[in-house]
Image 1 (cartoon, helix red, strand yellow):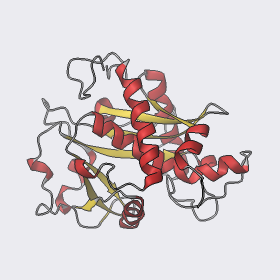
Image 2: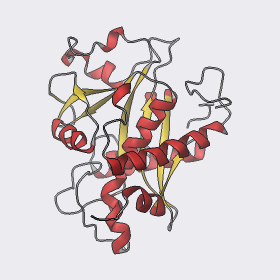
Image 3: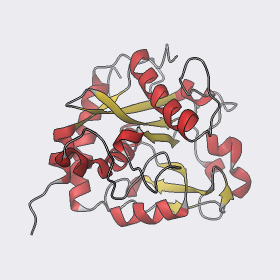
Length: 267
């Protein structure tokens, strides 16, 4: 039996950051621009070279830093609609509700502020693929990037996207959310299920940057079905996120269940 630990090696080479400053959030916007605008062409290019939308006003961002180089390798965000402002929607509410399977989960009946949407997962090209992965923002399978990274570092690159997913789930857990929504390809959902994230499909397949659908993960499934290795990684990420958030000064409407946890100055 192998003694290899995904959590130990991931933590050796990468560090999760809660983007609690304007500068860190801009690092996330730059990664998104490089992937979604420059590389994939899904979003328009701009002079600022940052990909930003209206949801960033009420989103919380995570960054993944490559420890040896200090390079931010990837990002993800958890968007939480303000309970007091129903005009501010989640992306799936603005674009995908017509496909909803309300008999499974009716998100329109969930209390505002009790759920969010994970989106804008992006990983720099140098920490991904090459050959068959030229049209995707991240991968969850084996990769062989032609980079200056060591063989041991490259061994951990396939876990980057999962580490970012787990950081988004940790944020939702710290907000005591009852669930979260993700727009993703059904085949990605099948991979996530193998890792222990049993998202339910709550919308019909639709054309949304390719074949995608709405998926929902209930709070009781945030991490309880994770494989043993990924449960260990989730525990490290959750602890790291909680410690970082604890020392951030937030406004009175913070969703985090931690004292003294401002989304001000986003851009």
